[in-house]
Image 1: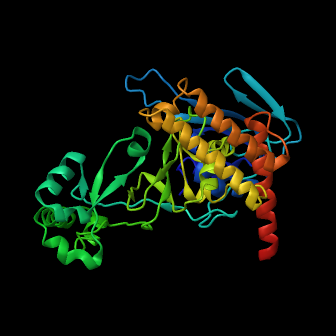
Image 2: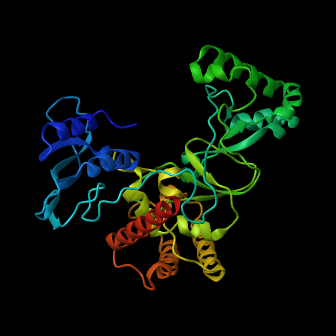
Image 3: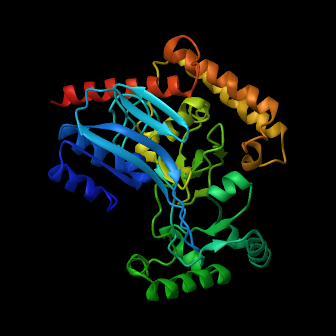
Length: 392
């Protein structure tokens, strides 16, 4: 769904098709807004003639919202060099990307399956329970100590705070064929009863599942397999995307994504600078932070050609990253990947991983993030064009 501000762009296109400009919320150049908006504007013969990269809008009001905005000017296929501004910096080029960098007018569309050969990614599960099915470590210990049979129905429950902060949380997890046994366990039965009462009086989505109070409303695709968990909110100041290896039997919450695989080369790719650059380029934003997306970031990420030997080399590099993290225990991922607090051994492991992966793209490492971004955009454009030709 597009922001309301985009309606002004379509109105201006009809009222003043030769040239117009707006200050707009920065989301029009980020994430899922980009493809539906800019495909229509570009197809109408418009191009970005100038732009200012995202900045926080402030005014003299006492309650300042601090909204992030961009300035975008459009013209009917400008022939003059375009200009891009960022505070005191001014850049010129032939075209400006809808993501507001000097580059091609390529936009990335969300996909339900990976464009390259990666395992499936799934969203985490959402209980819609008013926290009746969520259990703290202290509550879990009390329940299991008094009713050991309850342990069958309590699983580790992991979202962004748990992945990044190393926190513990649990949930009541009852499969449909185990409801009778669960109801025979008093503390579990009490949780199920409380969930039913909550859903009966809550919103439409909750009421829809009031007759199944033993289970999460939205279960995602939960498998009793190990997975790689990815928080859906990320700080833009981290040099890499912190992901976690999660053992089988863990429930990933709606605050994270899960990739059910034991392949360490997948972890290496997700832990690369290339993937972080792709997230920063095409992902959504929360203020000045990043919002990860399975359909828009993971499923569209361009991969180089890889042999089995290449994957094994990447897998070894991924394991070195995990080893370096372990060597810095008890620091959690949020601490390890914070700006100015990146341990040398972890940095070295990531840099080695980057060298291996980047050499698969071009035979050498990239000079900077702009070069990484340009290569990824080029690969994406070529792949989508080929896919469209095959479908025609």
